[in-house]
Image 1: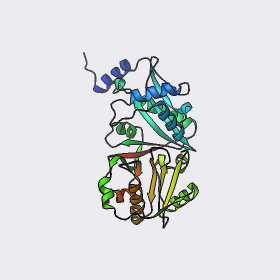
Image 2: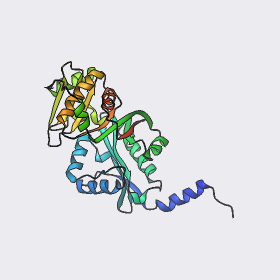
Image 3: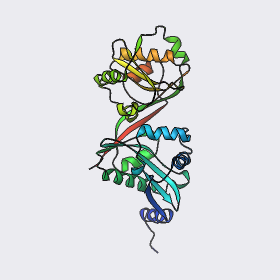
Length: 289
């Protein structure tokens, strides 16, 4: 009997493991179902990705996720993987893509991504962006279907900043400004934001405070809710980065959390204060024909 090649054996494994699998959109699922699927599929991830129902609602609204053009992969009647597609004019962003841990390593992710890209093409999107942790094996799957790295993004999460505050003796003056003025000044800095720092995304927050330094070369946007979340920060030079960060660090009680910050003057200034990324991730892009 002729032995089968590794490729042939893998094809047989796939045929067995993905039987009774099909892909649908998420259009017919309610918020509770989507929240359950999200939490189940992200179990065991590098950090806690669990969402409450309300958190999921806010995430979908901020990202402008289109459930009609997002995909779910089913095994029998159970959703075992999903992709969430956010849409901004003629560009898309994968706001989450994951396979249930019990169903991984069966080739389902490739099927899921292929279906998602076909949906994106059907509505004439030109580009699809996503962000993936440096150590995440999914990077290889994205690269295999044509996604390319566009730049590194730095992730800062819940860092202790007490020592940094002690070293900053002078608190530079900053002033409140309107959101329009904030984004006008940001545009002059040639700041290139990641998806969650795009102007249209940030304007969807219901409450916020915008700040600029005296020279209007740096700014920060903070949420006004009890979290006081730092939504955005930018600078066109190192001096401005030091000024705006010094002001932010003195306003913050004990932690700093900044997600998807481009590797720019802000990152440079943070490193000078001894604050380094807790994780590196890559922004990736696929141009659709």
